[in-house]
Image: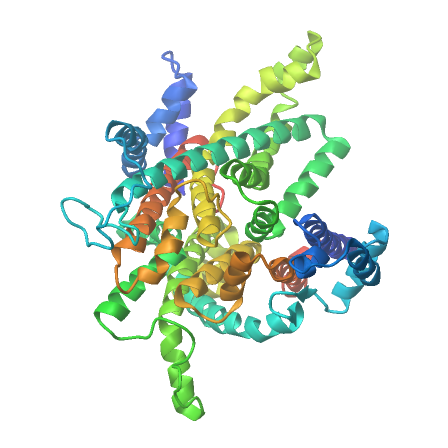
Length: 321
Length: 298
């Protein structure tokens, strides 16, 4: 067990080093260094530029620069965006909660409905129910989230005029108290709907496959022989064991889920990571784009590690395997 | 699950009967039972013929502008015209051709790399196997979408480089499956006899073993293609695609601001992406079931 923990932690640490090193490499190889970027348009002599480079440490050996970069990242400093005249870390800190506000409820709703659908499909393999749920989830994960967002805007907002389509709150409205919460909730409805639709498919498919994997195992026969009601056999016994592969694969898909959220935000002008990433790409704001890469990479690596380690605690079979 | 296995068992029994079945026949027997997959395959073939030939026959210039700006779908412009008066249908056709090309290229690259690395890793074993599998693990955990996005953003993403990037990051599932097959084939009599005959390792790997691992190795090809199409569209949508190619993702992002005033500008390119990805996924499920000896979750 300790061997497993050590290997997993070491692997994650290595991946984090890889993510940071890649970011460093990319930012060094990006066209133009920060000095030409910032002062390139001004008429400065080569001497002055060299002095600035020296002052900023850009003429030091690469490994020294790399080490300084790593130290900065460890301190939580992800660089400085010349275009925004702001450090990347506070910039991200201000917008990441908005992305989470969109993702967390979407994942919860999608998990609830998706697992139910997956179980329902697995209990009626190759029957009408199974086929419909299968078709639905196939359609679900084939839908580009940005396109679904556009369809939602066209039908629910510009035709039916039910819901707002842009941003997170009505401009100029009073944002205090319950009215403010309701206003944000109304703005959340459509983007959340898009994400639920997209995530749901993954949950349903994974649950079905994982439940089928469990369905032939002897402990279910035992549970049924004990005379347990079917509902308990399925939800207490089978689903609990099927949950591990579901969670593991979902952990691996966190990056894809984030990508979906990013694109949905762009369509709905939601002030989160996606919006910032989109703008940064247009403005060629390298530190922001690579800061987001580092943040997403770190979160995904650590989430996967946590899922694996949590299962060590929850599931004794892995502990003694 | 039994229904997934039973046809294969039956095929197996039939295969031992006097009238021996070729692998291709066996594949077709299982594959054609999935009607949706057969229909998807036909639809994709028709699309990949009609798309390029329509562009050629009608000499569609996707950049041809007119004074007919943002006009709704009509007989002259079945999908309307965009903010520069360009015909949306013509551009969508061009975009579909680009997407199909991307999907095919990504699927072939990823499958090729996966087959080669999986075969060598499984056959050689040792440190090479270990190294390849750790790289595969890393690529599965690291959010490749954001990795590819960062690389394409920093170095400029021409269509070819995006295809290569996607192919290079998407091979791990193929390599894993192939490696598993090779591990079990390695000790088979035909491999031992090939070795006894003095065949070189390269010949044994690629002439003797590889053909047997091809069916499970290419089982994922359509699913990889659909992932390639969707990812390329997403990258173009976020603005890191090739600016010199007409791509569906780019059309969508440029049409975004007309969503409420001229719905047809972003809606049709998006519908085309959806249709292509759906067809590839349905086909992919069929291929996967007909080519893989067991089910693997996706």
